[in-house]
Amino acid sequence: FTHMKRHGFTHLLREAGIEGRPISPYEVGFIIAPRINAIGRLEHAIDALRLICTTSNERAKGLAQKIGSVNTKRQELVREHVKEAEGMVESQKINGTLPHLIILYSDHWHEGVIGLIASGMVEKYYRPTIVMTKGDGHYKASVRSIHGFHVTEFLAQLQKYLINYGGHAGAAGFTLLEKKRDSFIKKAQSLASKQITEKDLERTIFADINMPLSLVSRKLYDALQNLNPFGIGNPRPTFVSEVRVVHAGILGKLKNHLKLHVKDLKNLSSPIEMIAFNQADIFKKLRKNQTVRVVYQIDLNTWSGRETLQGLAKHIEL
Image 1 (cartoon, rainbow, N blue to C red):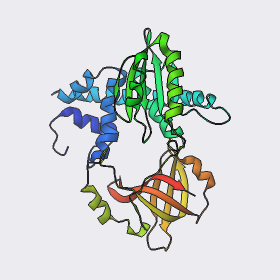
Image 2: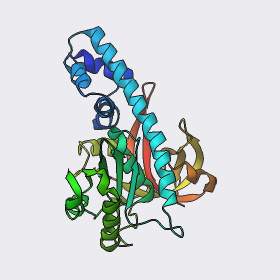
Image 3: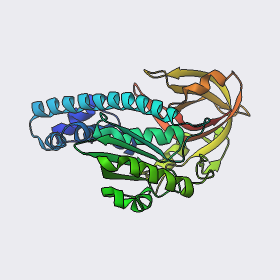
Image 4: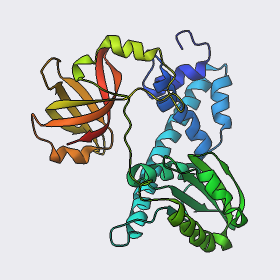
């Protein structure tokens, strides 16, 4: 990206606020790609192709602004739909317990974001989740799963109810005739209750190594970058450390993220910042100098030309 000849990418980085920053797999996967993806989810992917191919600087600027606007709309839609979906899930509880498989449907959810709704439900409730939205005489569905439960193989057992289906172990999609919705849900829930065990539904946090926080360094971070790109099949290395909380606060537009400054228990390190996305509820339980166990990944935060090491906290154990 240093010497880009395509105007579209130049303006997309500018719209995203990352122009001039080093572009790592993180920026590609979590900032650039979601913008390109959003236009295809909500409108038409042809505008993403036009952005990439245009030789007009002005055309590129307009398309980048449009794609940024659509991405913002996508984020707002997901927030609205996820909140509604959470209410539906809570209503499915019987004596405080959810079914082994969450199935949700709506007449108005946008087809382009139902996969994101399903992912949100899996993240919050740790249950395989099917999210369906109504079309013309049929439902379109996205499915997201948990570790150890192959959803596409599960759908194969239900194919007599489906117009079509496809996917892999962790995610799938299908089309269902409207008139078969209730019978499909009944059979799917019945199968899930037999095939998904309580042990399957225990959320597991994986870490590669237990180490003192004092070993976190720029040298270690740089060495880890040699393992890029990270993703499925090559996850980013994860560490677990016992640390002392120096300071805690919440951040984000929705005040839903937690920021900690933590130190090594033996005071061998300067305070390191930890960001825990969507874990602001822990803030009320924390106190200064409290010892906690943190599962985290090492990141580099760049702000105003200054680089500082940062932890991305995946789990905080009080």
